[in-house]
Length: 253
Image 1 (tube, rainbow, N blue to C red):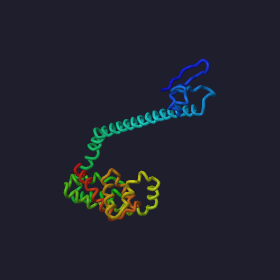
Image 2 (spheres, rainbow, N blue to C red; image 1 turned 45 degrees about the vertical axis):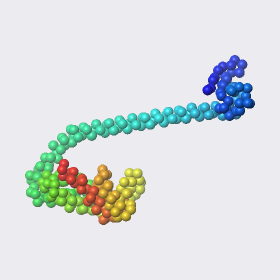
Image 3 (tube, helix red, strand yellow; image 1 turned 90 degrees about the horizontal axis):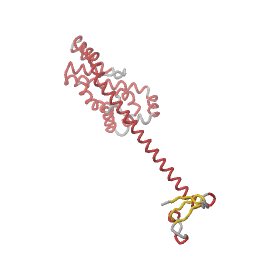
Image 4 (spheres, one colour; image 1 turned 180 degrees about the vertical axis):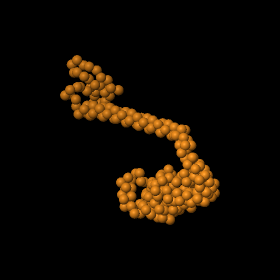
């Protein structure tokens, strides 16, 4: 334990246990050594003072680091709460309003205006061409489910998917070097799609399947797939397998 006190003749006096200074007990008159202030501080005393100062700095750094960590988690929680509130508002009011006022009337108009064969051609053409134009094909899948049911609607969509994913794949070949440079400039963001071009035929097909099941934008992947080095066979097979759950969910919706 350390004691401090004031001495009228010698000024500030610091008394510390001898073992802390590395001094033998027989070299001292007692169990403690007195450290004088000012110029009387020896080399050992300055070392002890430096250690005490370093310990204080470390404690201060640990305190600041802990405060920063707590503030980071607090901000993360606030962001998650904000995103959750926005999602709840969208699902509760914005989404249903948009569906009731825009999507459903348009789908009903299509089903009333066109015959079943014409709708089949429109659904097939939209699923095959919309991904190339960077347009979503989900509304066409809804029409297929409403008009033709789960069985024929699924077959109609899955037959158009190979064209819809093949056209961007081959078009991306024209911009291969530019897309590859974009991927190289963003290695962290592109780490997911890079997996598609690694390994053998089976590994590539499995990676493409997982990417299709994941929330990664499939329209973006259609154009970037060529730059990853994935072969067309694994790309097409993995796409067909990975899009089966999405097609069923969309038709059911």
